Amino acid sequence: MAQPIETYRELLADIDRYGRVLRERFATEMVCRLGCIGCCQQHLSLFAIEAENLRLYISDLSANLKTYLRSQALATMEREKMLAANPPPPSTEFPPPPESSVPCPALVDGACAVYKARPVICRTHGFPLLYLEEETSEALLEVCPLNFTEAQETLENLMEEDVFHMHSINERLVRINLAFMAQAQDDALSGAARTSIATIILSATEAT
Ligand code: SF4
Figure (tube, protein in one colour):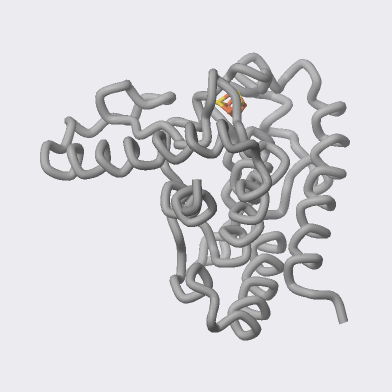
């Protein structure tokens, strides 16, 4: 039987495969590109299986990059403490203003240093995403405010095959995560429901 980490990587590969189809279909409507880091101005927490996949990837990076990521992770934690003590005024801007944002600690020179192991949320962000409201099962469409800006009509006429069905993806992710947690009870990261990216970096760079 396949290990949860392999099943998780199959999920990532399926997302990438469908992402390539959508990217081609919406080549003019989507402006996602290397260097656009609006969606990286937040510090995410991940399920145990995603934390483990990221930890394994970071463990194999060069010593220099690990040292750099470690210093960023520590700075991110400090920044979060500072913002908790002095909360900025609420903002609905996208990307969030610098005074209230907490950039992802894996961002290096305006690019993701862990791109190949980025979690599901980062892999799907930017595409049209269909969610089901938990209580009412009402369908909710989400898309990055920077994409489809000149294509309101396209957005309004999306078909089933034009979106990522996030309820199915998330159900699959939860199942894989449960299998991983059942199997890896002794693992430090699998004990937590969710682990922040800064904590994952610190765990992966302990010996650095
Ligand atoms: S999802 Fe939005 S913020 Fe992120 S890369 Fe795409 S356009 Fe930029």
